[in-house]
Image (cartoon, rainbow, N blue to C red; front, side, top):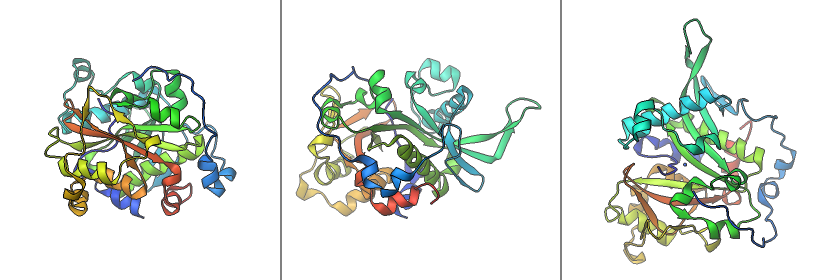
Length: 322
């Protein structure tokens, strides 16, 4: 399964919110001097001291909705059940026999990642008879830091893209891979999406992350029907060489399916999923080649978003206390 960030039409609120989820270890290479990173970009970052530990603490709240990291295995299992409900029951992905039996979307990466949760306290129910009520998990994001990936099986997106050149070029930067994101259908609105991004940004500050990476999806598996948005990303939003992850040769699908002069940017933007349009607004660029994921019925593209590329107004919108 690809590390989907967001999918389908229910996430239109992301664009509005931004306007205001397997390789061998990479050999040690000679590194360039480390770039300034987030501390050099945000003058206030040096003074920010988010509480220790970050796990379990509220990272934002809007009314009855709260965002924080999972701290218990039971909370991770609840996130997995939410992913199953959205990916398999709603979106029609094909589950494995184990996933169908457990009704959970789970893999080995879950034990390595941090899990961001959006909780609805108004929908709290006891976990067992006469037990303490627990809030409902209505949104989730899976977060994998580069240093964790390097000690284990690598980034999840390495199952689709060759990240070795990117990791060599960005050796001094702290990377964060986003994946396995979903929101329960009744909650797909501005508040939930903003809470997820506020949680991600708090995590970025806490761990001094320099760039976000991951895969985003376009619905459908026929690249010719997606020729316009794919060609737009290739010609107008292609990542610079140091960030340009390339699809694995055996999985690669060309994105330049139309010549540059045949791409109508306005029509292409209308054809892009809201998440990808949101990433474009804040400065993301995209890898070379798409990957078709027939299990999930999507065509995936690689996203690279250095924190330094995010405009000040967007950073301020999701900063702690905003």
